[in-house]
Length: 152
Image 1 (cartoon, rainbow, N blue to C red):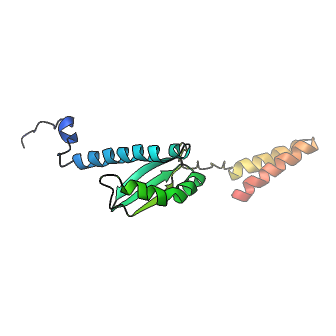
Image 2: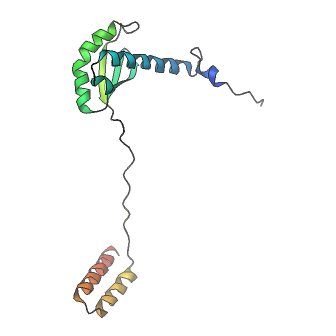
Image 3: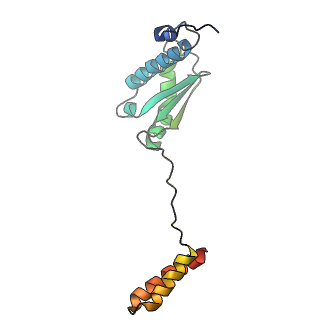
């Protein structure tokens, strides 16, 4: 099998390239839409939304909180009319708004690890508690030993 030379990144990113060209063109179009939105929306609303996708003549906007999403939904009819005046957006049918919070970590919750006590350890604690004269300490050791016996 002959070894072929790797493709240059610049060639992959060209607008005419069949692999990444369409994706790059889509990203550029979304950047242009973001600029238009920032110009057309009043501050501070324009700082809390972003064009996420444009597909099938539907513009998807992400807002960074439910409150900003509601304000965007109320502004959608006016925005839709303004955007339809822009070249390439005359066929825009609707604007959908979704909440996409920024800066929130989406790490899974940590599993709680439970310590386990063997039956032998529980018996040893029980025996030690029998030899203790302090009633508070004895009660604590017996309670601990009981937990070990319950798990066994």
